[in-house]
Image (tube, rainbow, N blue to C red; front, top):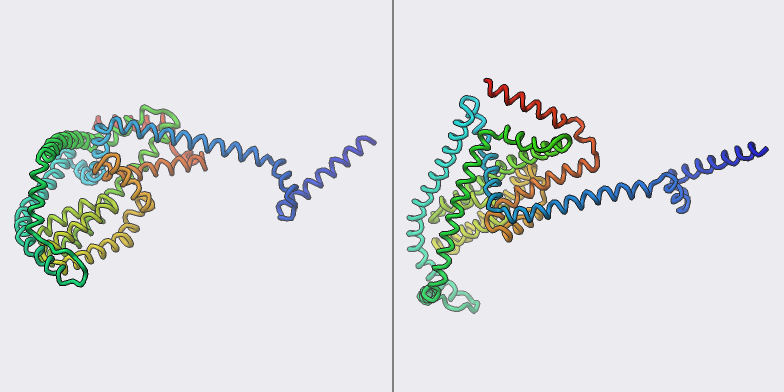
Length: 413
């Protein structure tokens, strides 16, 4: 009798549980029943376990980023040439790859770097030559146009003080005479900066040569310091980061080239002095997202104002704004957006932070560094949500053996 009563009790409990389950799934259960159902299913414990694991990984990532920041701040003199070498290598890698099909790796890398330096020196020489004549022409036109601006200001109905050119020149000379010591100290500091920049550039070129010559084997050698699963994850992050970096540099170069061509063409049509040097400056400014385009556009407008007057300056400003709209709404989403997938606000914050911490070099390198960090975060997020995402990848030992066999075959051939 007791067994039959216990059996009926169990049957009634299971039936009640089934009804509660169906009620919860159908959305008709009370709050208490839903809570009891979730507790039976172990939902709070599972949620707590998952949340703890995610928070633990986030804390580890934040601590790692803080440590990375202090490491970069301490070793910035060494880190800067390495980052520049990676950027140059990503630009020159396609050309180097074509040359390596018919030439040894060392010779192909040397020819690639020499060709790159020849282009840079040629463009720099052409810019200096044209700038000398352009500055002379600009100085002649500027005095007349400044006086015309003074006459124009007097004709306006607004209360604008008279623009006295002689007074402005006298004030400038007095300021220079009163700050000779400050100017000399800044010049001496600039000479030291030039020496530091020269060393950084030379070191970056040497590292670029070795990256182009032994890039694939160098990456494998670095990854050999890790083993097993860490090897797989590090290799995947490195591969994704390299692809993102290469795509960013090439797409940003295309956007900067379009900006320089259209703005330079507008300056040339309006017969503005320094048209080609300004176009080259616009091209290099294009690698500094948001800030570079605005700064170079305002500089071109100022030159047009001094050389040709306020009418041509307004036309140049309109051309700059039109090109910026083309860049922001068409070129950036199509070219750069696919490679970075970063919101413009994040890019602006990164550029501002980089410029504040490390000057022009920091602002220039901020966007690619932020892009690489975003790639690492995206990969970490994939592993948190789906840890088996890399199950299709080979193990670290298999990759090492494969690369070793490839290197041996290359040495034999």
